[in-house]
Length: 327
Ligand code: SF4
Image (cartoon, rainbow, N blue to C red; front, side, top):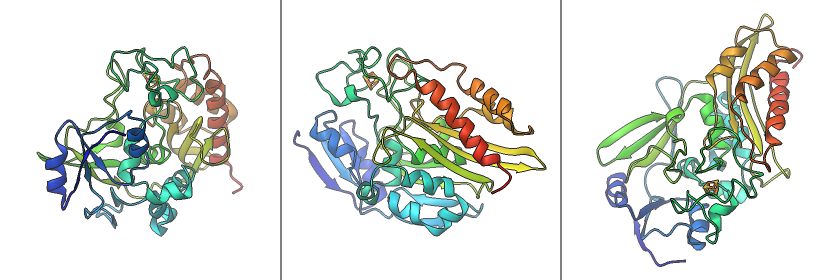
C-alpha cells in the first residue's frame, strides 16, 4: 500500500472542501476502498475520514418517505422496523449482500459507490480501461462469467455489484449530495453513468461531492420481492438479481416496479418492461414478453452467455411469485 495523508473531517463543509482535490477520497466503512488501496488499484494521496459527520440517522420525510443518512450501516438499515414494514424489498436486498461483518461496517453512501468485482480490475498485470484508461479490456475475451450483458460498451463490460442499490432503484430513490456549490438531489435513475469510452467515470458526482443521504419515496405497497441468484448461497455477488414491487387488483397487474442486478454497469431498470406488464392479466406468455423486452439488446461475451436464459427464468419466477393469488 502506498503512503497517504489522512484527515478526520469535523463537519460536512470541511469534508467537501478537503475532498475537492483530485487525489483525495472519502472513507467511511472502507470495506471496498481499503482492499483496493492494498492492491494499489486505487492509490489516493489523501483520505478524508467522514465517520464523525452527523450523517448516521434515518428520519421520516414530510412526503411519508425516509431520509437515510449516508453513514447508516447496511445492518442498521436492514433491521430498521420502518424499512422492514414499508420497504421490505430494501431490507431483503441488504441482507442478501456481503456478510454480517461487512454489513456492520459498510455504509449506505459507500455501498452506492463500491467498485466492480471484475477480476481484471483488481489485477494490475492485466489491461483494464476502468483502472487505467486506454489500456484495453481483458474481460471481453477473458473470464467474464460475472460480467454484464446489458448497457456495456466496447471499452468495459463490468457490472455494478450492489444489491442495496438494485432495491433502491426499484423503489425510485434519490441521492442527496453536498458539494462546494451547495446541496442537490439526483434520482438514482440518473446517478450512474454508462461506461461509453470513459468507464473509469462511474457516477455524476463531481470532485469533492459527498453523498449525504438517500431519500426513499413513501412506501410503494404491493408485494415486494428480492431474488438473488449466485454461485453460492451466501457471501457472493449476484449473477442475476431481481427487485420487484408488484400489485394485482381484480386479476390484473396494477403496479410493476422492477430493477435488476448482475446485468449491467448500474442497477438496471427498464420502463418498457414495466409498461408492458401494467394492466395485463398475469400469465407465462406475459412474463415471456416482459423478458423479451428486457433482453432485446442483451449481449453475452462467451462466459456470461448463460445470464440471458437465467434472467428470463428468474424474472418469470419473481413475477409468478408476485402475482400469485393464494398468499
Ligand atoms: Fe476493466 Fe471493465 Fe474490462 Fe473489467 S470489464 S477489465 S473493469 S474495462
